[in-house]
Length: 331
Image 1 (cartoon, helix red, strand yellow):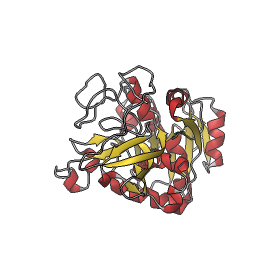
Image 2 (tube, rainbow, N blue to C red):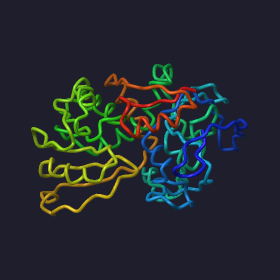
Image 3 (cartoon, one colour):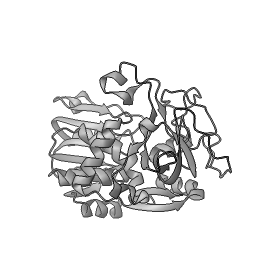
Image 4 (tube, rainbow, N blue to C red):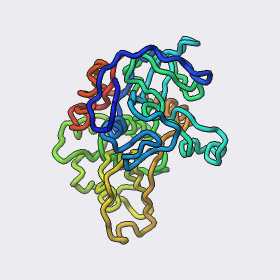
């Protein structure tokens, strides 16, 4: 499934099986999750390196359009036969000041799967073996359930870790990432407060089913002050709302690659040593950390499956909130 240019629907195409370069391996795709970042790419809000036209353009050495999206890949390496996970971060230089200090997610030359390098909305793809994450046997056995772990899980967990030792955690936008983070947080004894689109009673019931102590609309105030708020919805006005909901010393962590503009707010809302921070991409260490946390918590993904040629419909269902949990393309 190809994206020829921003704003155009994805189209099905027959292409040759890709030839891996010397530093790549050929991977047969088994399943690929559909992420909100894929929607930002489709809409031109995130663009390949050097193409311009988007508010956010991650650095890298991309090849421009057409793009094969998809960065929550579960696939079989053709050189070893191992089932692996291929995440958003697809390549880094390994020598810059970020890569050499444990911050490869900030590498200025990074390449991203499904943006700068071919993604998983396809039957075959290629990948840097350094960024093919080994999957535990029980995870690899169910590629559809495993796919959302590769971005919703990994970046969601990185976002969650920035909440520190917060006891009362608000989660804004209860979709793919939130339903995984919620399970880990509840397992660790945190109190989760879920914020959904106003009136979305199904999502609120889903959050309570996963252990949230409270669920309501994003236009509501929680019954208790929060120690931290995690924002997964790409909605800028949620930032000042979350700031007003957190106690002094609390953090607001924005977990997406793109967000609409944050409106101005009075300094009093930030005062009291409150913090706003973003999360950029992920590291391979995040992969190992989250997969272990997910195993310990017994995390279960809730998925809606689509055929490969239904990728455009999956994106539109994601856009309009017509699915529960995560969308996954079955290959």
